[in-house]
Image 1: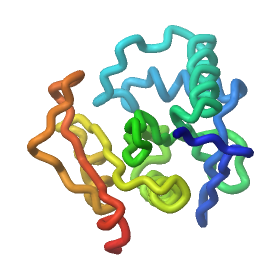
Image 2: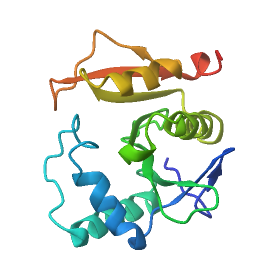
Image 3: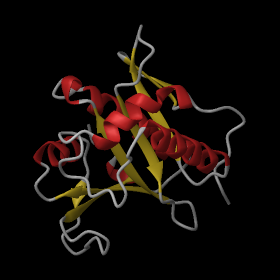
Image 4: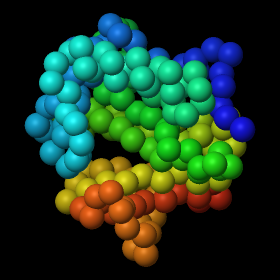
Length: 182
């Protein structure tokens, strides 16, 4: 079982439009994946060296969307065309009932509730449209902003799990039944 979409699901909120990331977004994705502030708590195994590598990543992500392996959205403010961040669901379980959440945002747009708004819309999509039972997020133990975002959106820290790939990460989980507490 995989998630295949006849059309890419564009998600809309009061202030945002979440759309497919395209090759035209290469320079912004390069920035998001290499900027020191954005990546302060992210351990990327092979950071991009140039825009071409970011475009290759976008192409790989697009193939993953076509194959039902992941879904990546660019975050755009209404009335704008350039992405200011990204958010994704990926690393789906074999039974397609669990997914991992990932996100990043240009620092000049942080602390405005933008990521919370995008996250809330993606959670609704994951639980209602994809019928996921659980969404998890791995974040660096020192990333206080990310931890606050997840807790604000009803995620719970699972103290009994560890990230085998990165011992600095902690794992938050949100079950479908807990998603609608607010």
